[in-house]
Length: 328
Image (cartoon, rainbow, N blue to C red; front, top):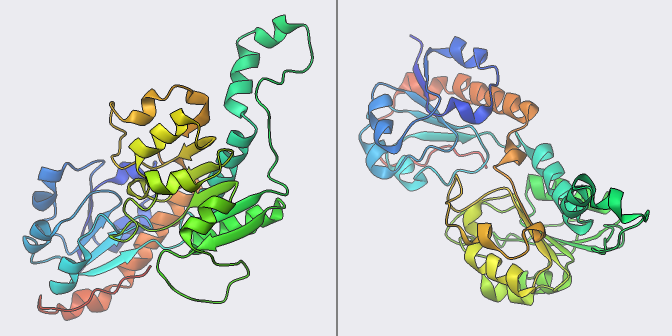
């Protein structure tokens, strides 16, 4: 018998073709799911697919038929992994689904900041350039990536791709490991303080966990060069947004780009929305994860994870203490 499959937030895949998922079982999909709807909607599910919907211990404990959670993204911080392990619920993520999309977004944001693209675009469209009577306008000095220093926080799959692209643009690349893992890499490994003080561009590609939450706050931002920029396309909780807003207003960092936030959607009173020079800050709503090709890859990954779960579903282990099979 085919399993009951529930997808809690289909809209996060931007209209990707989910036909393969429909073919794998008795499928029910919801565009969005509120926190108080999760338990009821998953009541009969054996497989749950979620991108951003949070599943905490009390929710998992109330779902005795649940055998597999497929996360339609790379990060797994929305699932209580310890509870899943204790309850014998397997967990899979879509590792690698958005590597190129996120890396391209990172490079694009860095170029836009270093060349003040937003300011100059508005200058031309406002009519000021037409009225200036001069070909050139040097109000904001621009900087190239070539010959600059790029620091990477977290050298996983995405971090590696960003490093490759940055090196191709002529940047010198160094990285810091947030896991503490020691391995052979083509780039020098340094401590976080050393990286922040050295780099012209710092990009964040680490998972959100107890170690990385608040990893870059006021003390870390104070170490950065005043000419440096920060790009966070990982998870919002890694960067202290209030501290970043203050650093931008003080001029202790030159600019920043965020595609992720501690609360999504962004709270209306987030201090980042009130900085004095908005052109120093690029904000976007998770566009690095939302390209059609990335969404298609995500749905395929979810389908593959669901299809490969036959042992998990057919054996139906008792919900005792076991570690879920987590792909990171």
